[in-house]
Length: 180
Image 1 (cartoon, rainbow, N blue to C red):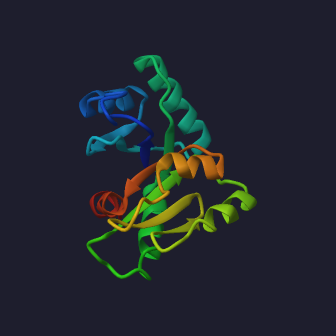
Image 2: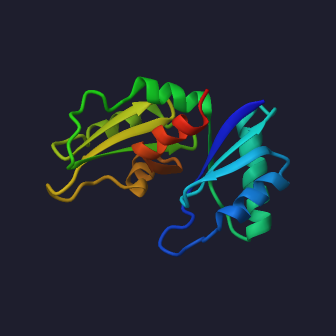
């Protein structure tokens, strides 16, 4: 059995696509996924399955959610091993921890093309720093020093791929709670 985390894009944001976590957990269980748990309200679902094909599994979950909820939900899957590798690598270790800097990971639905990735990196400036790590984008943003460009939509537009973003604290907590 493999442990996966499904990151759902755009649910429970600003009162749109509201899904209670117990309902979400029940839906994932109905998709024949095992040991289903949710973590906070932003659409993080941890589960186990013997299915190793991420594309097939993603499609199954997305189709099931659309059928049950009546609207499309973009699902981005990572294994717990993927997250453990990311946390071990820690793309933010070169940044000094300060209270005015926030760290995020944007999980990409698929790898973008190298030219678009290179273009995204050119937006690094005094306020924000972008790094591509496999199928993820690490972003550090300095708050209170002007308006940063970074948003989930910014990442999607620059890379031409669906994404969902989580605070680094959420990513590390998922590894702490569900990692090996």
